[in-house]
Length: 257
Image (tube, rainbow, N blue to C red):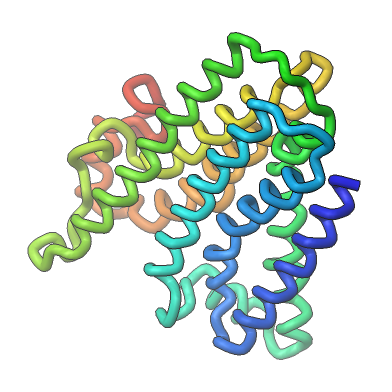
């Protein structure tokens, strides 16, 4: 019942966002829906949980903190702004044949499916409840806090940097951005490794590792890091920055392009 409730609720949620994005002619608004989708998943699965435990209550709070913060951040950045170039380029590739249907399937439904897979630890911890607390769940809390700090402060440092007129056209290479070229993406990945460990109430659910593996792979190889690296790879200042700053993992990550 828990899984069905989440699947149906999320489907309706993404349909609503599709209608909003279509009316505003901006499919980039799907980015705002991303964080809110996890919050909705956490709340619905928690309400359908047969038992309240430390684990599922903790995950509910952490996911709400993470998802609401991200939705607000992206909402301030994207609402009533021009459509992100990624989605504009998609429109050009789609042509004039069924663009709305293509957008619904390739943007909104793909993210719907990805969100469900990444949310599996959230749903599972509310389905098979176990009140016993393990050492790795404490480690998960620490990892989540570490990741949340990186994501929040990374986004904040970039936002402040871009607001200053003297920084127009420049790269941010100080603060957390001196430790990794993508502190916000690294932080997001760590948050989901933390959620996974907290949800791991029994070793039989180790298969839930698909969640942090998927979000990390998406950020590192598909939708996050590669897009920005490609955008700046021909700039001399970025090449110098890349020589001294890890690509993803602070301190020990791969340097260079």
